[in-house]
Length: 228
Image 1 (cartoon, one colour):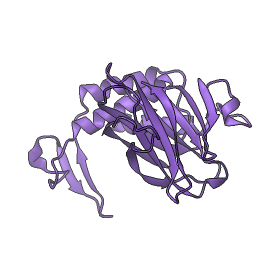
Image 2: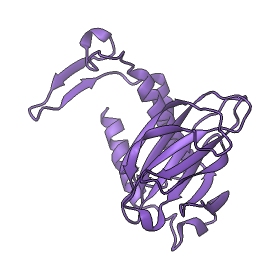
Image 3: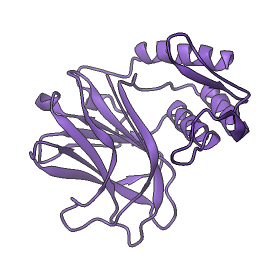
Image 4: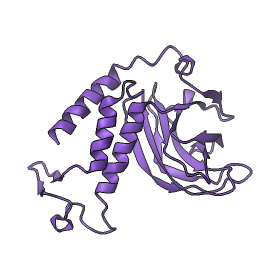
């Protein structure tokens, strides 16, 4: 766990030192596709860096390592997950457990990655979602995470994990919750990340949805982060 903490510290330093950005974030040459949605939101689509894939896999491995049924105590020592559980003087609860092999592999991949992470995170969410087939307007998508607000000069990043062969692409929708309109970026592939710039509406609450134009739908894993 100490090693993991040190790696996290180095990770945060690397994030702040990232030199990917230029005067216009979407003119750096790293984007497969860029554009502007009809509601004014700018976007870019690119492949995940190797380091981002590693962090994504680490998040998934960690979630799989601690699965708690609804209503159960996360830190139940009888679950067999934890070597030690307790409560700090400031009220924080904690649990200590062995790292799983999947977590070790993801950490090793992260350590070996040469290309770094694009952004530090201020809002984050990650989870598996059953992706619905899109209607003609693309407005029936499943929401990823909760509503959030992007701070000035920050962006939203939507990471798409592995996709099954029956659903090789998904649509990523971005909308303001005040009714300014829905729009979406179609046909985003596996292991790609969508970066969203809210433009002049950075203090407006927004939501991200997912759907697919494929003939069959399936469950897939996604992550959302915001940062500069």
